[in-house]
Length: 262
Image (cartoon, rainbow, N blue to C red; front, side, top):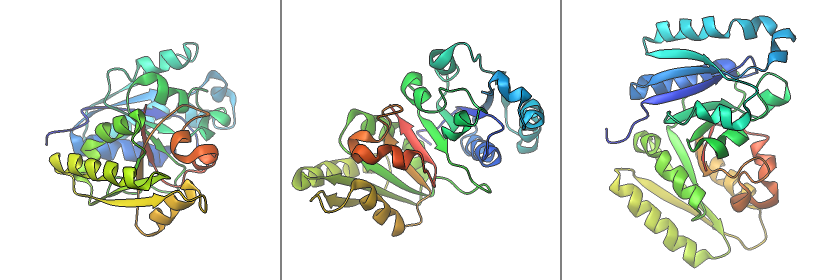
């Protein structure tokens, strides 16, 4: 395997979806034979809240899962006083971070810079996991959201280990420059092919009759997609270049994992 994630960090908290998030990280660590670091991002107030017992048991639960999965790992605690820069320090020596949605921070169960500021500050791809009732496979059917931007380019290259192992990869493009975007997508398909990734295009010309999100969901509805790969722009700008003013609607209502790079 040419590409692999050898150091993965999973952000631990007692927020909803914690089990699916940990299982996703464990599965990836097993697939790529990676070290898995469990980074506790619980703020101090979480230890006095209604889920205090769950918060206090994060380390024991994580270490028990490591033993059960027979993978190498370690448990660390994030310094809540250091802000986004301090949180990012834990990611600078990793290949991938698995994180919860912003709902975890909003509920007071994760530090406030999770996950948006981490996407921008870390320089490392972040796999944002939505709240799931149970763990599900990730990366079998992937949509790469393409807009010829620096961020989308970074996301594509950072996601190569997943793209190379996927059963299906679709390159989605939405733009009013239909002819140019078709050429762009063809070049992306050619480049991915050089890495052994077989992908197909899904281009939608922007005529003003449908939004980019509606076009994306039309693409999703045709396939059993389990992962979106896209460029990340930070809290108010995440997905902005691709999806315009509706970006926060998509990010705040994630129904599947999203792999982001900045």
